[in-house]
Image (cartoon, rainbow, N blue to C red; front, top):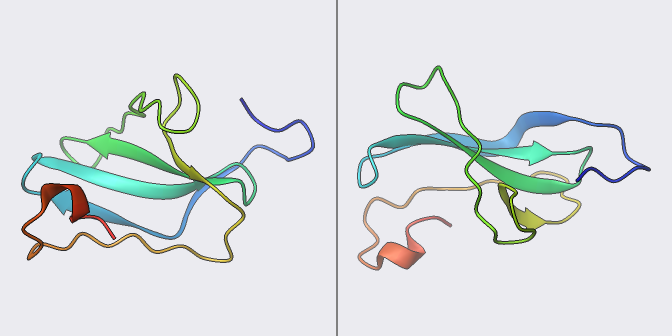
Length: 88
């Protein structure tokens, strides 16, 4: 749910778009809301995108983390052996 005090917005600011070969998906991390949170969208072809329900921050949303970033970068570490630590 959007914060009533904030205008609605979504943009790839500094977050990143990556192809994840382990999941065979493109993953786009983007700023959701107006400097509100980092969200995740996924795509099989890099053209059509879906917002998965992650239930990480709020049930039924694709919010990965709620914060007010200046710029956030998400990196896929292809050399990381721990699957839980591939995204940094």
